[in-house]
Amino acid sequence: TVQKRYADAGYLQAEIGEPDVIPSPKGLEVKVHITEGRRFDVGSIAIAGDETVDVEELKSRLLLREGDVFNRSYLSESVTLLTEYYTNRGFYFANVQPLSNVSETEQLVDVIFQVRKGPLYFIREIDISGNTITVDPVVRREVSLVEGQLYSQRAVLLSRLRIEGTGSFEIGR
Image (cartoon, rainbow, N blue to C red; front, top):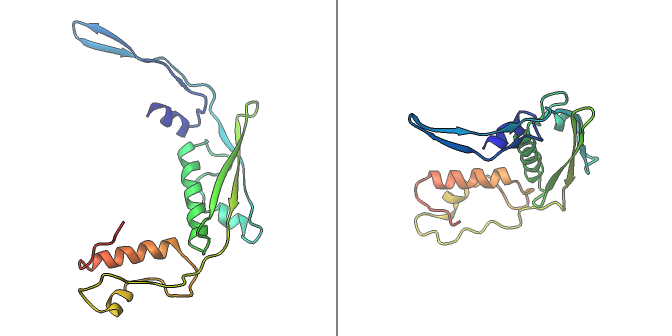
């Protein structure tokens, strides 16, 4: 949308008016009044809620960078990246909330990513059922997880792709 494009270009207060459609002999003329407002940059970025991680290393994975033009899509994608970081390390219920503070006078957006890791989860059991095509070890070799291992969302998705890639199975949704 137009609003999204402006928000991704740092114009957080852009106002998009209703279109005026004017018929003419040459066709329709459409006019839309847009008030961009001021452009905002990224101020400070912080990650809170996890004292066990190298914050600078984790910040280097983010798409948002201090001093860059603020991009709302980058903010959303950074939340996804941080969430995946934790869900791939055993925190099944990891939750990352972005808290932003917009400074009108400095035209900056300070962002704090509030992390709630939740408890660690381990793979207790891998149950393969309904398999009538082959023996279980053939299926298990495509599974990137083993019992007792820390939960990893990435390993679950990779296992799913590998099993589907054999062409012998459909994975239930």
